[in-house]
Image (tube, rainbow, N blue to C red):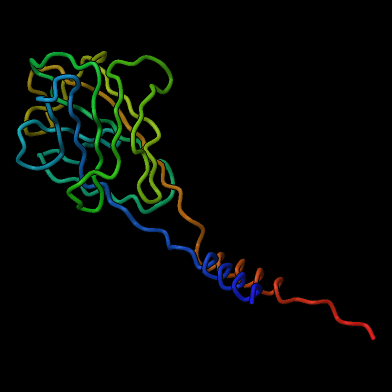
Length: 195
């Protein structure tokens, strides 16, 4: 009976959960300590958070994000926030939304203008197969790439930053099934008895 229970547990573990696809559908940044200042990627909100991949904005006209993250690898994004006449923030809360959900799946807090290779940040950094691996926000660069409602200069300095998501998929179910079958065979294999 013990061998049967072990076999069932091994088989269930070998089946595993298939890799779940995700789409980046939103981002939101709140300035700290003054939480009145919020930037996001959701249409029709006051202050736009511009998200770029390379030189291209993913939401140039205050549009909803919908970026496919189903392939394994590293995804690098630049972010632009219209600073305008708002006072400098010392830190920020950074939220990422996936698959059209209204609540954030990844949340992090980071210092603004942190210097160094990878500034420290903390929070809930993983969703499904995705991990937030870097986050940076700064006022050092004098860029002007977003306005209140759209990508494009408006005469005000922007906060500039970046974030990186890493997608590490689970092993394919077929491989896990083969490993599970091998484990089952090993459980039931007995050497031939000699007379």
